Image 1 (cartoon, rainbow, N blue to C red):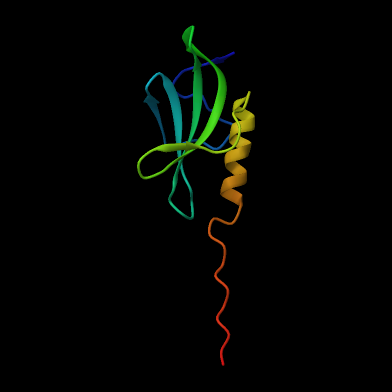
Image 2 (cartoon, helix red, strand yellow; image 1 turned 90 degrees about the vertical axis):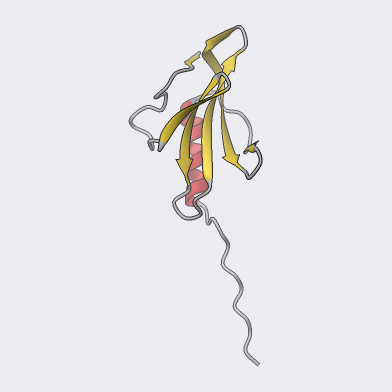
Length: 101
């Protein structure tokens, strides 16, 4: 089981800008390098023991809410990998060039 604590991302992975406690879960906050969108890796605390987490989620901060992206993960490594794939993919597809007449 994972420890639901501040600083939960191991040093060998991309480090967040900050950590926040949201309700009972610790969240690592990342900003997309191209779009500036805010992403969270969140430990999902265990309801019987809030100091432990059973799963890890990747979320995007929308205007009015946070939305989960993809399935929940069993390890921090999996969640960081999912976030890295988001950051490596093209954030905004190129607009098709207009044909000149």
